[in-house]
Image (cartoon, rainbow, N blue to C red; front, top):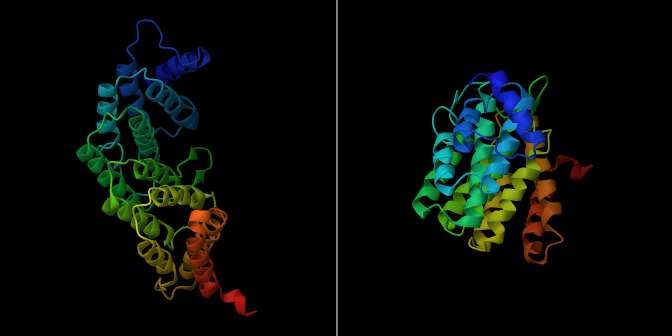
Length: 277
């Protein structure tokens, strides 16, 4: 199906409150949508395809078996890993495919249709994407949101809430977020840290990881080695500082996280060179 025809159909579906048009098979149309999940037309990609898939996945228009097939497509080399390592328009395919994964894992938490081994496989693929993708641009003029650091965190948030995944998997999620914060080639200016912190809180809410392990993870942000290149070191310092500031305020008023909040504050005081002024 051509792009303009698909857009015409999806606009009509949206106008009809996402009802399935007579004569159309929702799963087949969903596969057509996945062909354009990375299109640079943000109305098609975000407002129409993602919104439609969200409605059909969560409301049960697609069967659980069909959703599993959709998950396999979203996490394959042509979608979640399309153009990996490049900084170009392929970023949209990766970052919107991972949002489809987040939607499917949310649906799984309602209906429990994925086996533990399948969830572990999904986590492995999402972590691979999150750890390897260097194109973390947020909003791109004329093309809309890419926002891989935020979208990937949304998927990690949903996976962290899956009871089937245990301590080792949750530690992998924390370590992946740690790496994503500590980058020097891009400064996060589109509230990426808040989405990452939501995933961190999902890990903490499971109450599986020990206080000692959480403390070690937080203190690790004070141990980043500088490159010696001024601009890169400034960008990384900004990312770490912004993340820890936001983490502090997301934790401090929760009675279960007072200790963690105090540790975050201690690390912030340690790394903030302006404290001496």
